[in-house]
Image 1: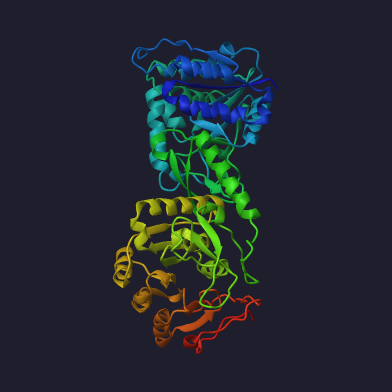
Image 2: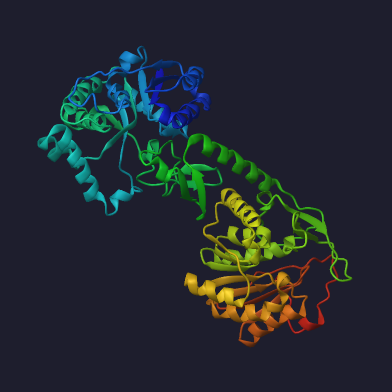
Length: 553
């Protein structure tokens, strides 16, 4: 089937149309596909680029005489010339139009448009889907809008008859050369232009032709994912494949993404993911492609990362490796007190004075956090993003309190790590970063946010003297089913906060790890089992002799 894909733009939309064209050319299936372009006002440099990427460049004429022709924007003539595509680009079997603010993600949609046009004449997607926001409370407003447009173009009778029909979106469609739609569309467009001329006239004329001129049976109605309108519903991001998909099961891949109106409002999208997280994405093709390539590279590194010599992981743990998202986190062998613990110590290369969790300790935090997915978590001490990533990837909504967040360079670096982890894992939702310290800051944050926390991690290594006060404040703002984790239980001062919770009826255990992790909990959830490194002759400090070490059952 000899096919041409046609698009159009002026200089204002040129960056977008470059994405449209590249989304075609980047696909191996486009090898035998011609691209046509309507020049609506591009400069010489833009035309040079087009000459290298498209097959045919045409300047549309004013094909209709109508009262408002001298006042409508020049780019309107690109829309009005569409019923005459066969004359501008002769000798093709199928004419597939794609607006400049749309781009191809999955070529299967292109195949369906071509097949639908060959089968019936016109292939097009109605603006209706189970995900469309206007269907849930906005139907009356939407149909009032369509009715008023029909009335302005074609009068009361047509408006009354067709106002409640689904809108067929002409931003993406395919017409066969022998389809009967061409002449009828041309006739009705000329009729509508005499009454009202704007960017919607040609679309309503095409809808009128399909619904009222015996062309419905000659039209193939394609699903919404073939022409996904972001103004009706945002897609989801499948982070495993890093593609845009329908919001609901079975999460069919979006074939053609159509930004459609209000580009400035939705250009930078906050997308939900299929793993219940959120990711910021730019809807433009070239930006999304770069983001995808970067994310896939990080995912490959994360999946193929192996244990560094000197790391230990307890058996039975779910494993993650966020290291590629934290490029400044490095390992160094360490010695705690006089005991030769061979587990690596993790630090930030720019701030090696801030000790971070060992690999085993970080995975204890992650595996406990998995039990609280979707709940609120509090992190006291961001650990340069190391503990934060492990906790957030588990799917909690995390509030982070750390005085180091007042340093804008560090804040931006941690935010970049979190955004990378969002792209790689797709499970991170809300992360709130707050500069501050002290028990009063916990109380202020709890009061301000008006919620309690289910999982709290206290990195007491940077503020040992305040651990008791932290424990008191954390208990006040903890959920009935909650866990509070302490790091650095080797310190007797840290143990004071732990002792306080035990005295208040919390159940308590310790994990024999490099710095010794303490876990206090209440409610139904139990801490995860753990096998301490059998290669090490662990010694339980005297001040922790009354606490039982957690082992696998």
